[in-house]
Length: 286
Image (cartoon, rainbow, N blue to C red; front, side):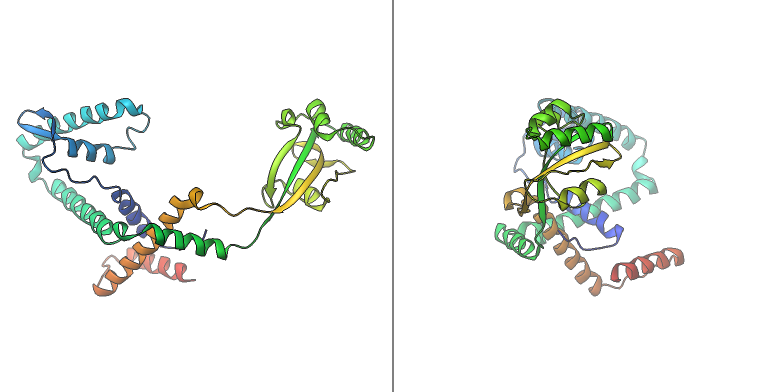
């Protein structure tokens, strides 16, 4: 799956947008679930808290997560009240934080409303079809192996195989590898997935043949049986739908950002930062 090369800053902005794409729907007359003094915590605010604090509470069991988030919101309200009473909301650091939070929230909502909400299932499916059509066919093989500690042991295994012994049974009996209980079955694999010596020997075999010389790798000595070669199946839509949707999000996001940047002058006043950004832009265009 090809992903467009972009500036790291743009990727951060996009991650914020995608997080915002799971925005909590507004609830009319949202029920109040708790009160902190005169302040109310509504069900809508609780849902927002769950979304915003998802990472912090990821390890909390699902049936206890909402209560944990509510407890955290109560603590937030209590300390926020104290901060208000001490006039901390007048500090410039608070105002700077609020400007950033406002801009980020509006950024996310704009992306949600103008892009995410308008991407149809048909568009995602069409992008999947295009990606599948562009994929180069890959071959992979299904193989078994018997792993032993010495060349002599490997040669003894080969001698037994040449006498007609069953490969899978010998693997269960003699292999020291983790696949021994499965008769040495490694399943299907393509090029680049095994250590080079193993891969070269396995792909050089014909279907149904085993290596007549031991194959040495960093793990020990192998006897390899290649069972069959096939064209690697292309992923089903259901298996990659979320990934495809993220690709569409990214492309739409960058299209939107480029359009807006073209409409509005952007001037970077810090000379070092300007140089760094220009260097990144040149690199991405190469």
